[in-house]
Length: 223
Length: 219
Image (cartoon, rainbow over all chains, first blue to last red; front, side, top):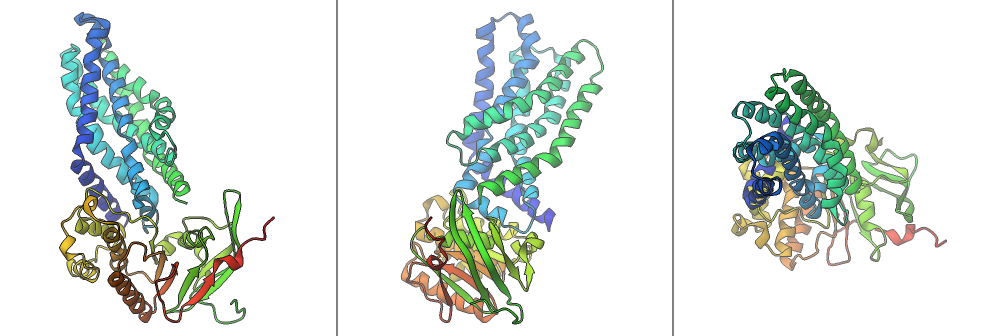
């Protein structure tokens, strides 16, 4: 029954996100446009851009994920869907996990797909692409999970989007550090396995803890 | 209303007190319902009808008191309690981007009812006159149509306890009659109904509970 509820919720949220694909388009647009500002800001020198590229891509991915978080629970909270989810027989944390998974599939996966375009634009060395994308693939699920906690805590707040940013961005720092340093390590011929192990450990901790914390925050907000 | 020593009621509450923010909404509230029973909640705006329904659904924790199903405290097994109730609140939980049929399919899936067949879904749509609206998106529905979609959920869930918060809001006369008929059928099967109303909705033989009777004394 728990697996059925998880799949039903996952299917619903993915379908809903695809129906409202302009949201996704805007987030991808933000990602690309913001990245294209850097050559203007720091100058078009290829070496400088290549040096900054991993950090720029990761920071913008973080910001883009954050911008997409308000749709995670807010509209369901406003129209009463979240209340019904809280009353479903399946544990609310399972429903939150399904929603975070759907968020990753519909917000983070497209970002990962677009990342190589930005990497070309910023002159990232070709041999770093694999590590960059692998790091994003391992790090962004953690961003969705932590983001779910922030989005749940911000339910009902007046400036929910800003509150989510303040709550969530500090918690994104570890993912950012290991994601960026993995690329740098690879470019200086150092083994990247330690960085990936840390990213994996962060995900392993977030996967059970974040849905549980977000579920508690949701129970509070629908009361 | 409270009869100690009798066989345990199917669903009852004792000494229920609810605090919201710094306001004591009601205190020492009690009722009991047996199979097929109905409780009609009345009282002026803000008296606490919605709060009581949310407490009974488990969305709000009561400050004190107990809610019991078959003599057993519902807090002992919350998942079992959630699996026996259906709640229709002020919000209809209808997504603007989904059609009426998709909305009902989603809820059927989420309530763990894989067993909900296409026939059950068709019957629910039919009972609420939603056939013609099956492929209309939620964004294009009127308030009354959304409410009918929300009430159609009750028929997908097959739960013994219905908690209805002013279910007739925005409904036309024919839909109110439908609801009264479905509630009567549900009670005929031994189901329980707790509904709040400001009138215009009849449940024959229902116990009437005026929340104003349990209001805390003004300090």
